[in-house]
Length: 155
Image (cartoon, rainbow, N blue to C red; front, side, top):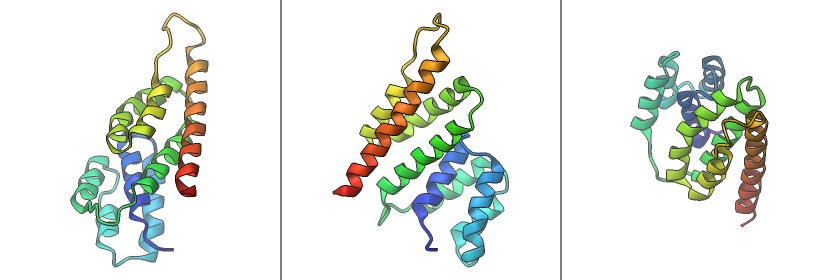
């Protein structure tokens, strides 16, 4: 297993934005740290404990755009929000988390930002099918993201 900083950064952002719980984030970092205990980034992330603010600060302190594959990072972000969606019990809460994430995604990749924005488009509040439509919008967004990443890998 090689250290994939894009995966680590994506998981840190997913944790920060609330798409994964502390236990999931910790298990992910522990997996890497057991293999690479000498890695300073991983050591600092281990020390952050359950504090997303500290995790984000560490990630920002170590950010290095050289050799960073934004496609991998964004693919991991979308995979993480899809995992969170699959276990979501309240689509409205999930939707509010996505609004916060959308701006970050749109700054990095306007195509993916547009895909997520279409899922975030609000239906009429008076319509009793809003949660159902929201779910349909997210499922379509995940399909579009898969096509987008598939197309990018094919080039």
